[in-house]
Image (cartoon, rainbow, N blue to C red; front, side, top):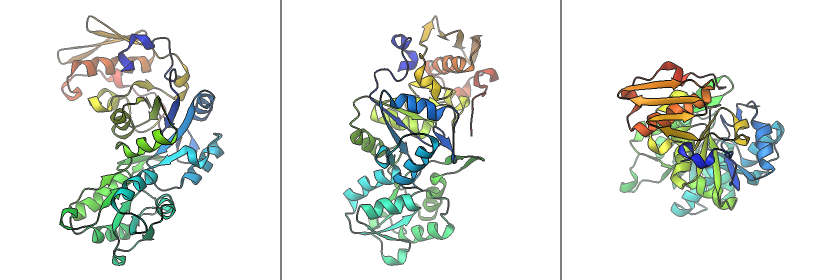
Length: 345
């Protein structure tokens, strides 16, 4: 990974990349407003690479997302936006062909994609739907979850209908803070019926496959704010990733990241896409990033040198802990290592 590679010392995360795929919530915006530096940094990136957007949020159409991004100062067409409902349609078409009746739990983004694909949409289990597709929308109510539960009473291996969830993000960043995401709503139905949904969005691969194919990406870079969905998903499809600390996951989560959820790059904000990314150099068990240096000795994580830049200290700490192979919860980690001066929603 680039985090440990000397050869990337003089290059930026964008070097050698032909396509940048960016998450939205926590990367570009939190609620309706743009995050600091995101718009200018992405516009600069668009002058040298193909730029596309991937979102697990199923509440809006690709056209409405594109209009929102355009209002923030980005140049975005609906085709540039890949949504989890679009990924869900890829899955659904292989299981239940149109014009089947589908019970939808969600908002306009999901309804729009179902109708474009030729399906008949219902909100009632009494209409004998042939599948349930569930996605996030702020207006989803108990009655919607109850209808899905009624339709999914019979297990699929006993003749029950399929259940596809656009995504299972537990939380979603908003202007006022962090709120429950689609994963909490899917979990409510799961608790009622004892079944698991098939998932289309991150960290599963269908949404990435859709984006890579649509933009004909040969070497893509994915930008996200969540280790368990964004970074894990990028790793699953074999593309480099950037974790930006403007959204959900914080420094303490980075230090504890399991192997499959570790990013190629860690940045404070999107300005650092255009800055040389420092190499992580290991000497005698000490991991150096610029002036910061960290090592793991026994059960202790030790800061050998502060370095003056918290982001470099975090990078060095992550490299040392990850290389140790020791779960972070059994280590004594100095609080300064996971100080969090970075912007968050």
